[in-house]
Picture 1 (cartoon, rainbow, N blue to C red):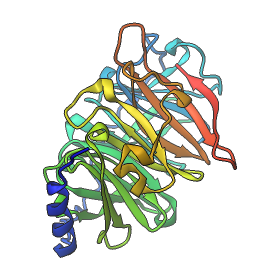
Picture 2 (cartoon, rainbow, N blue to C red):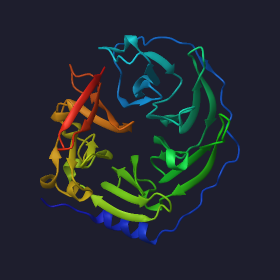
Picture 3 (cartoon, helix red, strand yellow):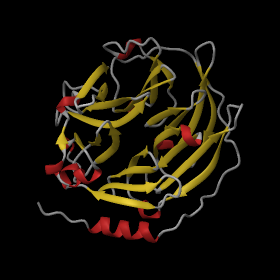
Length: 333
């Protein structure tokens, strides 16, 4: 199959030549609204374009993006619909992800280009603590990185990683650094995964996976994908494989959405060297769109977004056994 890697050649060149460009660090802690969200249950049985599900501090969360809210369930029983789930907060504009350091929760309020922090009160309500505006353009994904005690937040259109740290003994976070990847400026890049000493970025705009050093953000490698996998969402390392989710092909055809895996990142450069595991993860090709895969306590949580009549959003928790077999541990509404 004939493919053009011209854009990747330009990106690789720019990454190699670029040097770290320090971002302006905002010392201000960010003034939160102080809003307390009363405990209430979901008023709808289903989510709408839910991009992420996670388990944080023993609580299950679903980022219900097109309902502009985040749901949670602290019973340990996901149930068959969302009527048993409660609303953490519902004043977002297309949120995409949530993370936690064990004390506070950080949310990407994507279409407001904002991040906000929360904590849960002893009475059960969540309270907004801080709000940071102008976080690049449409920040999509966030991760708490325990080794550096930092929240990493990716701006999907500006090639910038915003790094926040919580002051020890307090609930306050401050923006400690903004690291830039100039070659990804203007190229839609909606997720990243911290994988050891590297960061793996899935860039639909660049047409593949870009790898940078976690500490320096210097270029490590680039892996262009074929047109069929062009709508890359996220790549994660699970057991003996890397898993890659896609929302469409390069041309926006969502019927091509799939999850594939390979024993190396190089394997994603050809359909012949990766395995389609959409069905093994409970998905139906052309009917559901796999989105983020998030590791929580050694297990992997992913959402499947329903796009066809009769196919609703659902979640899957999975892992791999020692032989590389996919084990489905639970399903979520």
